[in-house]
Length: 245
Ligand SMILES: [Zn+2]
Image (cartoon, rainbow, N blue to C red; front, side, top):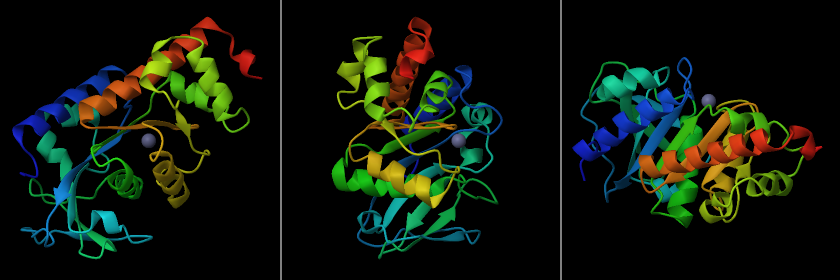
C-alpha cells in the first residue's frame, strides 16, 4: 500500500474543505490521522529530517506501523488547497515504544500537538475495531456547547436528551456519544480517556474543546461528527438547555 495514494489525497481535500466550511476549524484548529498499516520490518525513512517521538507507554499493536498525520499549526483551509505541504507520517518502531515523525513532502515536519491522542486511539482501534483506520478532530459548535455540562450531567442523560430530538441518533449511534473529562488539549489524561472511549464509541465529545470521531475512512469519520453535531444542534434548538439541570 502506498503511504499516500490519489484516493486518500482526494479524501483529505474533501474533509478539510467540509470541516472548514462548517466553521469547525478556526485558525489552526483540528487535526486528523489515518492508519496506513504495518510491515514485518520497520518502515525505511528516506529523509534525514526526522524527529524521534518517545511514547508514554508501548503501543504493541502499532509496531512497525505507519500513520499519516496532519502537521502542527496547519490550517484546514490551506490543507484543502495543498495537502502535501501539511502532511507527514509517524513510523513506529518494532517494539512500539517510539516513533519517527517525518515528511517526504517538506523540510520541517512536526506532527499535530495531539499526536499522542491519535496514536493511543489507533492502538485501541487496531486492537478492537481494526477496520476503523481514520481519526478526525475538529472544534464543532453545538456539541461542544452541550458537552460543557459533562460530567455535572451524566453521559446517559445527555445521550437521552439527544435521542429525544431525532430518531437518527439511536440508528447512527446505538451506544450514544462518548465523553472525556475536560482535560487540557494534547494531555496524556485526554489521550487515555479518549482511547478508552474508542473501544465503545465512534464519536467522543471533549468538554470545552470539540469532537473526535473515527471510521473506515476520513469521510465516514466526518459523517459521524457531522451527524452528532446536527443532533446536538436540534436538541438545543428544540428544548431549553435548562432541561439538563
Ligand atoms: Zn482542538
